[in-house]
Length: 171
Image (cartoon, rainbow, N blue to C red; front, top):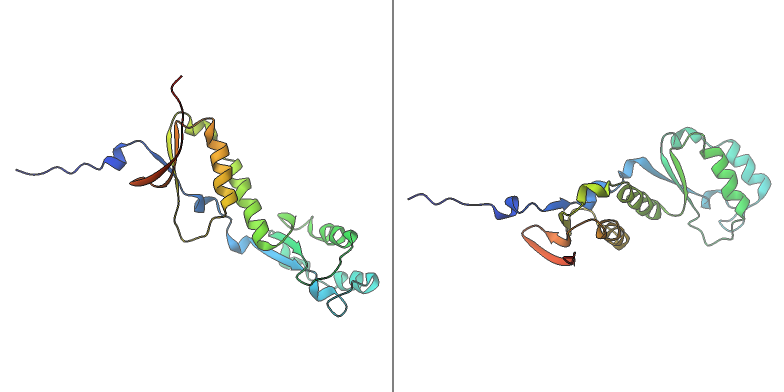
C-alpha cells in the first residue's frame, strides 16, 4: 500500500509575504557626504563650497536615489542641503536627507505602502521572519498596520511554523 503525502502548508491557503522582496536594491542608492566639502572637516565656507559644487561630476548621481548626509560632526547650514538638492533634483531619481541606511528604510516603507491591501482581504497572511537581509522593525510595524484591517489573520515566521499576531474576531 502506497502512502500519500499531503502538503498541508500548500493546501492551507496562507499567503506568504517576504519583506526582502520590497527592499530596495543597493546599487540604486548612493550617498552624497558633505564631509569632503568642509574646511578641516569642520567648517563649511560658502565660497569654497559653491566652487566645489560647480566642479562636481553630477553624472554619477544620474538615475540614482541619493542620500544627502554629513559624516563629520559639523554644523551644516540648511541652505547647503538645499543647494545640493538643487543640483541633484533634475538628474536623480529621488533625493533624501539622511544616511543611506535611513534612505533604504524609507524606500522599503514606501514599497510596503504601495501594496494593494485588497489582495489580502479575508486572507490568512504570514510575514516571513528570516532571510538574507536584516529587515528593520519599522517594516514589520508598517506591514501589520497595512494588513490589520483587511486580513483574516496575520502571522509571523514561516507557513510551517508561525507566531500568531492578529486574528479577526467573528462578527
